[in-house]
Image (cartoon, rainbow, N blue to C red; front, side, top):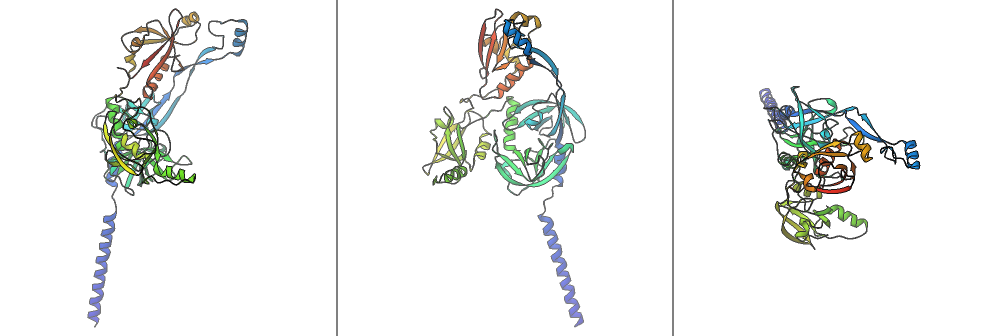
Length: 478
């Protein structure tokens, strides 16, 4: 009897041991090992230090006594009267900021956020092994908040780029960056939402994650469990300014297109459908608040509020009240998804569109256009393309022309300014309502106009004889 009882106890103990072992193995198998992803990706994320300012800027200072007596007695005093003021130069202090970036190719291309480097005069890139390089901007895109910079180096540890479309809700992700100057920091979380819009301007289709993101993480990597880049960390949602639950990353589907365009054209080729719309759910909720019943035949998609005149949507007969449900075979449930899909195309690309009207489904093929309504690809305009050398007015010239600002065309060759009718000796005073005091003013207005929808320079000038003239320079023309 004792032998039987002992055998039974031994068998029970062996069974429990096996069950415990199996349970441990099952638990271990269910865990996601993120150590390899962290170790590989951390070397591809860099620390970016930005220095801006430290320039001499010219300001116009009004002298109330001089203006009063000058106007009262009719004296100009070489342009210092008549409310024109005096020019003074002020040295602005240098400002420093920091962020993160991701090495996407071994030859030195690095992706970061536009807001990290847009005002940079100097860019220092520090690798995980503490090697430092000087960085230069290849291109900026304010709409997606992405920037491409480059360092002169080879054999850099580039990250593998994954497909953000493959991400699933609840999937583990790592946020790698340099928060609060704590270099090479890794945090972990899950994908909380996809195609998230925060209601700001620009293209918004963020990956939402609860991995901790703080100041300094901007431009860093969002990485999947394979160590692949799936997003560029851009912002956090917080009422305190520090991490309080959610961060947002720009998906690689958008990043890849922006990077390729900046490399090839220097500017992003943005295709638009030519509609203004909102999520169907938002439209239905708004109508219910007005005590109106709505039956569109679907509860998902993009409700078309307005058709842009001369756009691609108008060409195929899309109307207000239609609901876009598919783009190029991909389902569209909300506006953010529509924006993300369109962001992957260029003007001139042809895609299929599926929409509902009166609860019936319709299909059409559409040729996408740019914001100007054409299929032309835009190219960044180099300052040299204008073919002119500009110099600020000397004190003698200011006195002669009774001016206190302006840029003299001291030399000109074949280029956009000559084509517009500008000649040597003319004085450019105002461009797009901005006074031209320094050559930097001219360079800034050209760069900003190049990024705008209306790529046109409206120039007011005077000739050497004092005659007022104006010119229009279309930056889209080759």
